[in-house]
Image 1 (cartoon, helix red, strand yellow):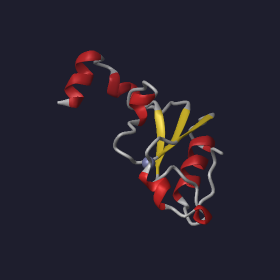
Image 2 (tube, protein in one colour):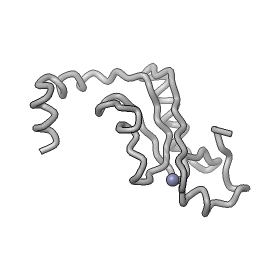
Image 3 (cartoon, helix red, strand yellow):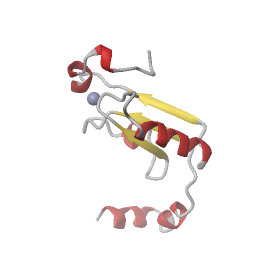
Length: 104
Ligand SMILES: [Zn+2]
């Protein structure tokens, strides 16, 4: 259904996605009320996304730095968006000593 709608609007859409070309990394919370592509008005293919609760970089997290390194070194992405949101349950639950925030 979704793919058919996309093809109806742009028959070459999925062909264009074969070559990964984008400008942004999105580091955000997986909260279902925060749709990354929708917020920045980009279709699939427009963002390289990493999500973790409360959009944090933690000492023990090897995934987020890997995402950033891959996006910068391999994909040539030049912009990083770190998106927090109001009412984030993860931010309330985590203890301050456990986190290092990028967006202070
Ligand atoms: Zn959140």
